[in-house]
Image (cartoon, rainbow, N blue to C red; front, side):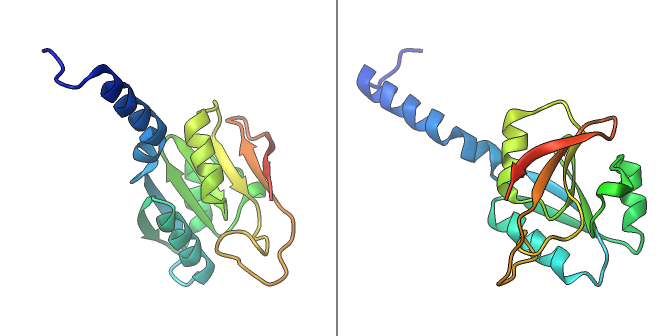
Length: 149
């Protein structure tokens, strides 16, 4: 099929598609979140994900550690909620930008974790944030720093 677009318009169209392609790929990424029915900060983290283009399906349960264990995330890295996004497990108040980077880079790993509930992380906003790290968790349970906040 012969293109009806002039060559310079085809090039411009290609540049536009390539430059916006990552937004199209990431928009609407599905997140399965496992949380306690009474956890308010989990709800705020879910809102953070939604504001950043994730489609969230929430599973309220009384035993979040059981979901964490089933997904393979070590208890020592635990927080108040666990999620499954793509092929990865996301534990705790991980910033959406870190998840988007993970999905773009696709490292061989179990997922990401922000252990505990650090003040200033998404869903834990406060006037007195503390520095915290997002950890890249390997399939063997070992971890290394993925991002510093």
